[in-house]
Length: 374
View (cartoon, helix red, strand yellow):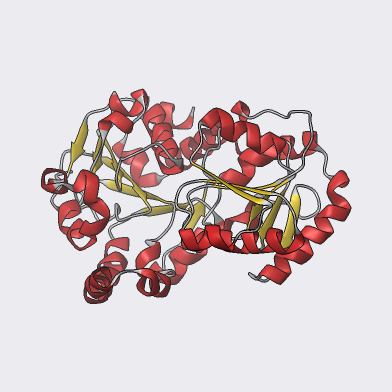
């Protein structure tokens, strides 16, 4: 059985690429296809596989791929997958739109339908420059049409959360099984010492609503550390003296902050959200907005607290509650919960799912079927 793995783009190692590594563990001889790639930023595990990029790579896509959204459907459909019996697409940007052989099995692991043409489209339009707005206004309707049409090229959808599964049903009218992604929780440790500041961590983009955490901690005079690239001058100017912006930090420093903070503040809506589980694996709780993937990882009153309105006042009320109840959160219990999402669980569930697909069982040889269900 010949297997192709299709990933939207390979320009770094984040959560989506960790999922791709698990696909590589299951199918060590698979070939990888992607729109653009920067091999120097990939793990040795991914570099061991034969990697094919689209024509976007040749026209500067490695650096400017995000500006080439209108060309991505053409680039995906130009990839030749006729030699492959099983195609697994990893979808967050466009990936599922590849054209497969009629008798091939196409499984899409969906991290998220494309945010910038669906649920975050008004926000992207409001924040983009004039030229980007004009291009998006012209191309988004056709991209949405293409995105829905290509959903019918997929034989089986897997969503990384129930929240994403509901969006797949909403936008594509397709059902999806849910397999939560792998989280490398074992590398995080519980540490002793003072827990005297709150934390926000991750790439700072508008939908993450970091400004709510900055405003709440400024108004309550609570210490907050913000880790991650992307903080605007306006956001920094709005912060009081108790807020520190550290920018990007090393993995070691990130792990230290995860175990040293009082709690992670998580005011955005994420498709799944790996950072909260990494913080829980470090023995610290999460204060999250009660929507999206956080509802599937945070347990109210045991691993964190929710606030249910995306406002400064609602977050302030949750912070006041946490200040009263902080001692009720047990680090060992938080870590035990996070360990339920470790990578072996993901691989086990994925093997079981693939091994039970009737179309794949007919395509796969005996040795492949045994490996899938092992």
